[in-house]
Image 1: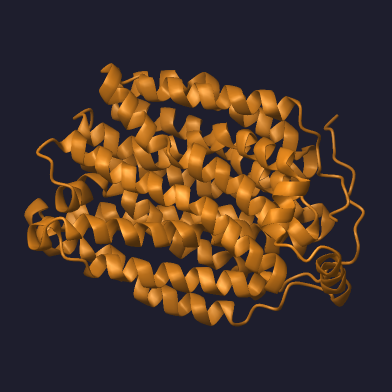
Image 2: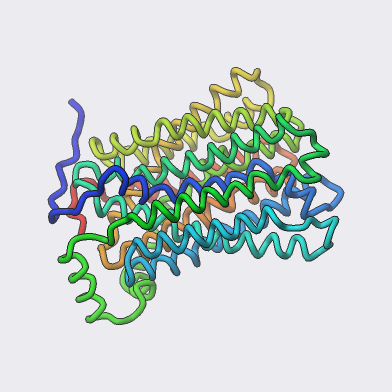
Length: 437
């Protein structure tokens, strides 16, 4: 008999219309479209902005900037979490989306190293930091907004929609980059065509601003009054209150997400560039495998959310981190010596376990913080996992592969991250049947 999680008992919630749900989750599409471009175009961007003679050295430089953007996510989670808890989720979502649209458009307008020298990587890095700040606020605030406006029995499903649109954004970025390499020669891409994917942020940003303007404010009057009362009793910053009142939850949440996020960034960001740079696969083949894996994850994300509502967040996360931990090293070994079909099945299997863990973990973590501190608490804990721990995975994996000379080193790192998360998950209670405070 299938175990079920008892329905949560909670106060009446103002549910969202389908358009409201789409508006709440849509910002992630643009934010993660941009982030995907950095992963799949890392080799090209390295040659344009960080020319060191060595392709691997250039790749390391781009992933270093990629990692710096993820470290900024922690600051973004704190900044936009403060805005979300104090001024409302809607305002935080709108500001983060505008910041990302402007920064991404400016990247597409940047002169390269050949044109202005060292100023090019400096400007490139500064814009990357702004984008990291924006993503740190967008993703966690959208999860907060979605679960707080969901029926109790569908919180994980509705919360998974944030990850769904993030996956669609990554898929779009991968597909656009794939099309770029298919339609243009290497010389054309390096000369001017690399700018096209970044300039697509202009129409995406305009559509997003219109959608976000339709969002209702945070929730029912009684919830807003409760939040105002909490602020009257404790006028300090919500971020400071989280660090003072819930430091253990922040650390636990970051470590709990280490494995799921390291696994995700290994397959969705690092793998294609690594396979192409090490001449294991042609660049177009590597990007095609990555695109197929991301598409599979997008399909599975709402299924994982629905299962987390039915059997619990904890069981889903445990299944995912065990699977990713066991498959990390075999995945990299198989990709080195298998056929194209074997490579595809290996990546799809690994992606299945990634999705089993990641969307349920995101909702599980959000549910562990009280409403008046949820945006700040989730912003700090999740961005600690996705930014500092998971987001640095491409840089760490590239460095390990370069330092050890082993193509299996990245898989060993993923296995280690999953072991950490497994230990934490075993000691973390289920929240699926709890009242959403």
